[in-house]
Amino acid sequence: MRHHLLQRGLAVLVGLCATAGHAHESATHCEAVTKSVSDAGFDDVVTVTCTDNQALIAGDTYPDHEMMTGIIGTNEQVPVPAVNYASPITLEPVSGTEPHTRDAALGVAVNGVPIYDYTAGGEMSQADLGTYQANLDTVATGQLDACGGHAGRGDDYHYHAAPTCMIDQMANKGPDAIIGWAFDGFPIYADTNPDGSAIATGVLDVCNGQADDVFGYRYHTSEGAPYIIQCLMGEVPDIDALPRVRPLGAAEGGQGPEAGQPPRGGVDDLVFVQDDDGTRTMTYRYQGGDYYIKYAPSGTENCYNFETRTVTNGGALFEQELCRE
Image (cartoon, rainbow, N blue to C red; front, top):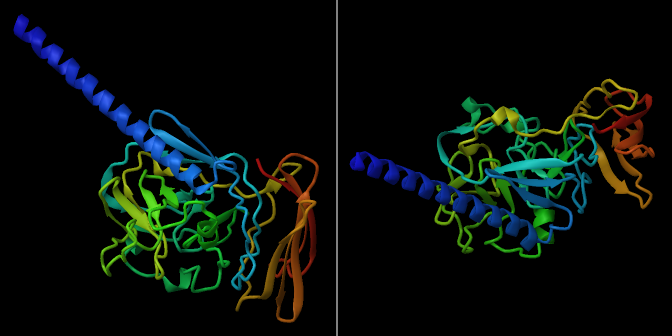
């Protein structure tokens, strides 16, 4: 009887130690995520809230740096602030046995802007991971601005390559600065190792990551494709439940306009400007014609009055109040 009681006591003790160990690991990882945001100087626009197993990095996905200007392969979408977009970062990351991808964000930068793979609409499939997709490369096809991002179908701004403008803004800019987090809980660094040394050719795996002494694993940006995190190497319990920004909807209910279509051959002189009154305008030329997308706060929370003449709709005037849910 005493033997059985002793065994049960030891089992309980082991369980308590394991629980304490997990709690310590979660707390340490939470501190690392929170510190990465505050050290970068973005804790005034991004909040980090930790639960038992996740750190939620929340913001409006609308960075305080230049956006959109210089894009050639525009999809005729524009950046509109999201509503309480929260990126869940696993606090007890575990390396998986195979990479995972999805048609939406794979992580988030420390300024709260989502990070996608290098393809325009998340077209990367599991089978494609080992093969470079030249026709889907947002860098090579001129779909990104100088900051490594653009607006997607959700009229949400996000990065597909190194977030260069954000990195320049970081208070702790340097090789050892964490620039973002993948949803599987592993950190993202810039082009070099944290000690500043160059990453040797062939070291980074298919997801653009490698082993790390502190976190077990880390991702990187790179000058060549895939430019940034391409897939998730760690375990994600429910990848389909990860967040995505939904397209704008009509103020009176129902769907908004159809997705824009990239004008064949690209556009010229695309410029995005923001006025002090909240009006934002993207102008561009295509085959000698002038086109624009103009929008401003409508007075209703999270809603905007749009006025557009785009290549997608043949230059016809479109006016509608569109809203975030």
